[in-house]
Every structure is written in C-alpha cells, then in structure tokens.
Image (cartoon, rainbow, N blue to C red; front, top):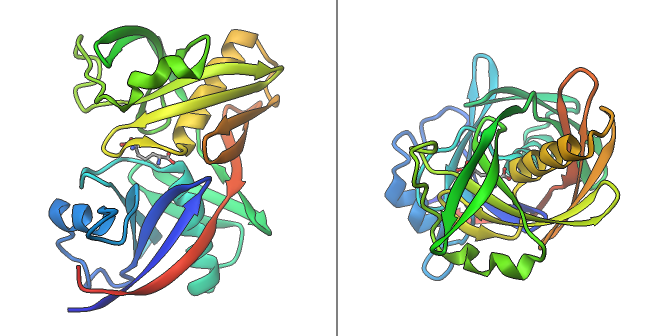
Length: 261
Ligand SMILES: N[C@H](CCC[C@H](N)C(=O)O)C(=O)O
C-alpha cells in the first residue's frame, strides 16, 4: 500500500515525516519498517522517523531512531515536525506538540524555529566507553539520556563511530554521547554518537545537554546564550532564569513523495 511521506532536516539531522493524522495508516509502525524507511541505500534515508498523529490533546510526535528504537524526544526532529504542521496542516505558531517527554512549545518565523525543551536533569559524573576507551562524562537528561565528554580536539572523537557501550549500568537503555571542544566564550563545537542512529551531523537534545554542561562549568548566569556548532550547522541554546532550555535552529522540508516501504 502506498502512502505519503516528507523528508526534512534541522542542521542536517534528517528525518522521514509520516503523516498519520488518524493513526490508521501506520498503526503498527514496526522497527523493521522504520529501518527500511531510514536505509540510505534501499530506502528513503534518515536518522529517524517522525510520525504525525492527531490526538484529542493535539498533535503527537511519534519519534523513532533509524534502528527502529523509540526515544522520548528529538530536538532537531521537533522543529522539522513543527515546520510540517505549519506548512501542511495549517497549524499556527506558537504551537504545542505532544511527545513521549510531555508537551513542547514551538515558536518562530522564517527559517529558524525555537523549541522550549523544558527543564534539564543533571546527574553525577559517570564514565562511558567508546571505541575501547573510557571517558569521564557529565550525565544530562533532556527527556533522553546524554553523556557529555569535553575533549581537547574533536579528532579524539574518531572512535565515535564505534558503538558506545556503557560499563557501569548507568545507561541500561543506551545513551547519546557528545564530544565537545571550546571555541570561545559561550561557544562550543560538538560531534555526537546518537543512541539508535550512530554518528549524526547534529543532535538537538545533545546540543541542549552540551550547553547545560558548559554553562555549569562557566558558572554562567541564567539567560546566557550558548552557540553550539555541529557538523551540520549551528544551534543556539539559552538556559532561562525559570530553568527551561530554549533551543533555536533551522527546520526545512526538502522533499515529499509516496512510498510503499
Ligand atoms: N537518538 C536519540 C533521539 C534523537 C535525538 C536527536 N536527533 C535530537 O535532535 O535531539 C535518543 O535515542 O535519545
């Protein structure tokens, strides 16, 4: 059975959008079908799938990683999802979107959108092993788990392409690992190995986690704007006085079509 899809990205973290307003088109969106859709050779290709279901409490973003696993939240994805709702479903900004990590508010004009990502949760330092090496990491949750590792240069993150394992059970559900370097005052650059997708060009929740760790290390006053450079572009993150993370970045729809994958 053929059904519509769209393709979009935010700082080159790319997604297949599946309109499913009544939840009847993709009722059993299996991990196998998500993998087929995200396959960059035999499928459409993407770091994840954003299925759009309209519920009584509003639009729900059903996010899946490229390996078919489910995640609570996707920061770049929710901007692309909001772009889809605005351009194809007539939703106005500011808009509220339901996710597995609760409701998020999206606002913006032009190419850049701002997502209110809610309150970060900061845990004790931990270690992650990536590419056979152990790294000391700050553990931050943005609804999904992140291990933030500061390094002297991003080339050290070469083993990033290896699947990070976690050896002390802190992340039984897996973890997104961000390697970070300083680029200037309130300016960092990162590479990321995403849980369920491997190395990607950007990670929105990861950029938020990185900005939180940098702001804590800098003892920066709340409201300080951090610039986070990712391989696919730049995201801007502010940790507000009332303990919310606002992330601003591009969100583009680049193609649409039909598929029977
Ligand atoms: N791989 C992540 C979800 C996608 C996060 C990323 N694409 C973003 O923009 O936040 C996880 O399993 O927690």
